[in-house]
View 1 (cartoon, helix red, strand yellow):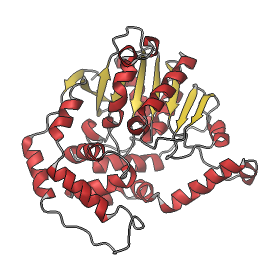
View 2 (cartoon, one colour):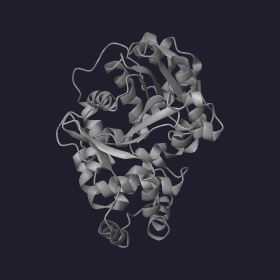
View 3 (cartoon, one colour):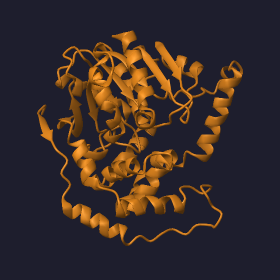
View 4 (spheres, one colour):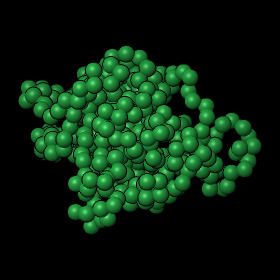
Length: 371
């Protein structure tokens, strides 16, 4: 089955009413008086988000905003795949696949759609225009639940290559953030005849265990390794749990919208616009995809027959300040064709939202090199 069907988001009012009822009956967790963020997402922050959710947040406005863009579904490898497909008014635009991560959704890229597809209308060069394909990862949001094992980054990459083939794109680029930064290089590995380049916001390359590898690092890169070790020890609970026991967690998240919000907010955090945090969380809640989204971590952790050779498709990095700090010597080991490596002193893990101008410029610059 290769049919592509039009799709429009239309959440039943009964689902919104049911959510409102749950939010009106929250049972809050207790917290130590001086806890702050030491134990995880604070009660004060979560209470503020829930108050906004109950009293000021407008899902219908966000639903309408999402529905401004053409959306479709198709079945690939037995899995429903939802995607936005926004064609540029420039006929020679470069096709570009944008992949989100966890705990975001297609909402991650709303702020970059206009400038990327229509630079002429945003003060840019029309030669930098892109046709955008923005899919929901299988198991996430409007793609719905996965129904069988094995939907890891490698299988998703194969599905993305098939999606671009179905859309008729012979040459295309890929960009990703978070989980998308894991999936997008695999798209290039799987489909090098058609992928002109891969742009990411993190290169997740880690020490191999060889002591000599660490001895040759610069002082700056040593600090990055130290921070990585600290993060894995103190900030990686979501990764460990979703990689090992996602279903245990999912029982709670599927039953409690505030639980879902708290779990997602540990990475989204108070520096982001509250409505951005709530809209991403709403999509997980309304589609009941907490379990299937978390399974991506499990499937990646348990993946077999992982490719051992470095990628060779041109790769570009835009690394933002408040994010995973990619380490060039390890990246060069895993990716043999890095053609662009830019580090910024602002922006965060969600740069498409809080530093869209920088990200757009970096994407444009990278694809000028590889087109």
